[in-house]
Image 1 (cartoon, rainbow, N blue to C red):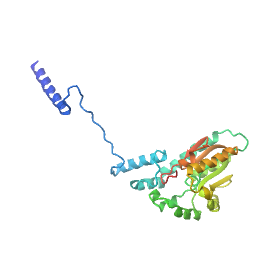
Image 2 (cartoon, rainbow, N blue to C red):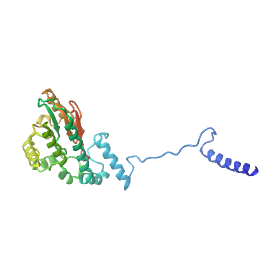
Image 3 (spheres, helix red, strand yellow):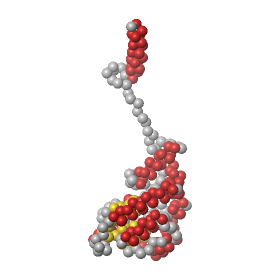
Image 4 (cartoon, helix red, strand yellow):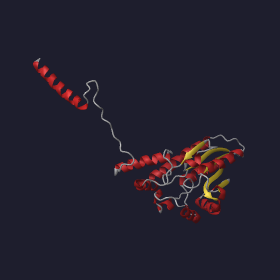
Length: 265
C-alpha cells in the first residue's frame, strides 16, 4: 500500500509541475500543439517547391487566383516539366475524351442550329514553341513578339483538340471558332488551321479593330450573345481560359483545357 501511495505522489508531482509550466490556473487544460504551415511567401526548396508549385497550378486552373501576369519565378521549372511532359498530354486527352462523351449524348433538334464553340490558341493550336523561347510564362506577355509568332503560321495542332474537333463534326455539330486573335490575322490563321488539319468550320470570329481593348470575357460573351440571338444552341464550348467559357450565353457544357503559362481576363 505504501508503494502505491509513493508512486501516486511522484506521478502527481510531475503532472502538477507540467501543468504549472503552462498556466497558473488549475482549471485550464494545457495548450494543444498547433501545426504551423509555411506561408506562400516563405522561401522553400526541393520538395516544398514542387508542392507549392503544384498547389499554385491547381489554383490557377480552377480560377482561384487573383489575375496574374507571370508564373512565380520558383515555378518556372515545374511549369516547364509539366507542359513538356506526359502530364500535360494526359490532361489534354482527358478533356477531349470527356467532351466527346458529352457531345455524343446530345439529342439534336434537327434544324442545324446545334453548335460547338472552340477557342484556337492552346485549344486547337499550340503556341508551345513560342513559349519555349519565352520562359514558359515567366516573361511578361509581349504582344508584338507574339504577333510575329502568329504571322509565321506554324503553330502545330493539339492532337486531342483535333480529335475532338473531328468528332463533333462527324456528329453533325456546326463549328464556330471564336478567338481573341486580330482580324488582320485572318488569312494566316486560316492557313495555319488548314495546315494543322482543321477544316470545314462554319464561322471563324476574330477581334475587329474596335474590339481590341475589350476584356476577353466581355468580347466572347458578346459574340456568344449574337449566336443565341440568331437561334443557335451552344451545346459545347472548349477553351484554355476561363474567359473563353464564363460570362453570358454560356454553353450547355463547357470544357476547360489546362494552361498554366498565361492568364487572359
